[in-house]
Length: 158
Figure 1: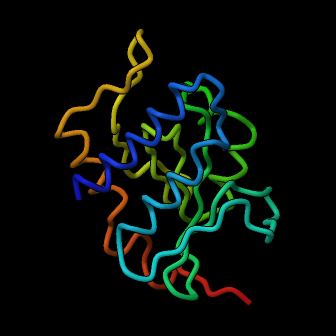
Figure 2 (figure 1 turned 90 degrees about the horizontal axis):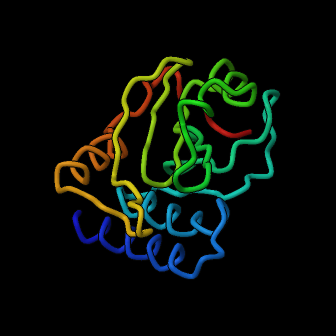
């Protein structure tokens, strides 16, 4: 598990080091991370399906079952502010399972309520990502939930 996160963090760091990374730059690394956590997980970046509340950045499936969505913000963006934005209020009201992330901090919402939060690391003044082993474990635990939402809240794609 640690090697998965080390690879993810190295990719983020390399992207940040180039000095021209944006929110979209890191999505490939996040997709690879998500898909490496459990068998049959698949993440779709910019899914074509649009919900009534908008279009979240990623959809996560286990086989044909849609588990939930991820909304990404750029590294270091204040998630407290984003959490209160009109976009996130719509998503939280409409989506039974959502993760908000700046690629280092992960906030998991079930039926609009924050269920868990974990921080993988922070960017220091020099632009380097600083982590602690306990942080890796907390994020791994959040992302690896065996049943992210209950069976009756899962829904199959049409």
